[in-house]
Length: 292
Image (cartoon, rainbow, N blue to C red; front, side, top):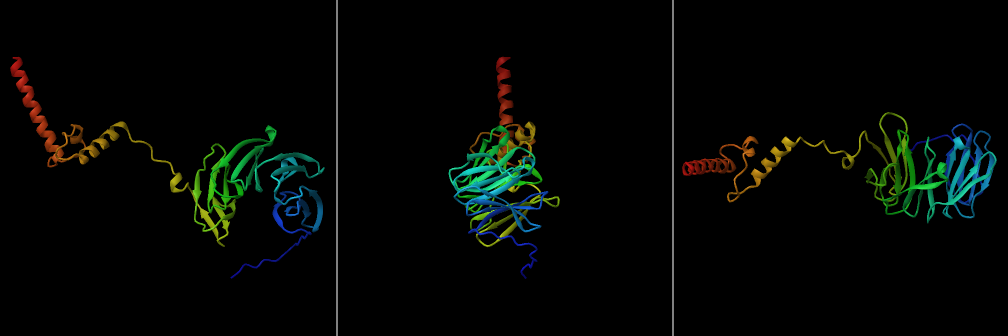
C-alpha cells in the first residue's frame, strides 16, 4: 500500500525544475537550487522567499549550506563552484571545479572540507582553509558520479553513487575505494547514510526503480582484513606438509620435518624418508670403517 503523507507547506517558484534542496539546521530555511540558474532561500514557516541568488545562466544542480561560515555553496553546469555569504549576499569565491557538469556537493561536518562530484566521473576534495585548494581527486567510477555523502558515524569516509550501477565507499586518507557495492541493474542516482541506530545503513536509489537498504556491521568480504600471519614454526610445518603431499614416487625424500608434521609411517613419503635414514646410517658406518 503506498505511503500517504500530509503536505504541510508548499513552496513554488517559476522555474523549469528544482535540482536539489538543503535545510538549514537552525533557521527555518530551505535552500533550493534551480534549473534556471538561480538559488532561492525560503522560509518554510511563512512560505515566503527570503533571498534570491542569480548564480549562473546555466542550471544549478547542487546547493548546500555551510552554517558555521554562514555560506551557501552552489555548483552549476558551467563547471563552476560559487560561494556566497547568505547574510550579506556577498560572493566569497568562484572557481572551476570540474571539466563537466557538477552533480552534487557534500560538506564535511567538522573540517574545512567540501566534496564535489561530476559528470567527468571524478570526485574532488576542496579545503577552504587552504585557499580552496583541490587536495584530493578520487577516480574509479566509469560513468557520471551523481551523488556523494559523508558517513555520519565516521566522517573520514563517504559514499558515492554513479550511473555505472555501483556505489563506492571511500576514505579521506586514500585515493582507492575501500569497497564497491553492486546490485542495481541500472544507474544509481542517489545514496545516503541513515544516521540513527548503532549499525550503519546505506540507502540507494536507481533507474531500475528500486531502493536498496544495506546494513553492514563490518566491511564486506572483499574489504575484510586477512587473518594475522602464522608463526615461523607453524608456517614451516605447513610448507612441509604441502611439499610431502605433492611429491610423487620419483621425487626426492621428504625432509625430517615431515615426520613431525603428522605423515604416517605407512605413507610413501615416510617410507622414503626412513629408507634414506637407513642408507645414510650405512654410509656413515662405511665411512667410519674406512677412516679407522
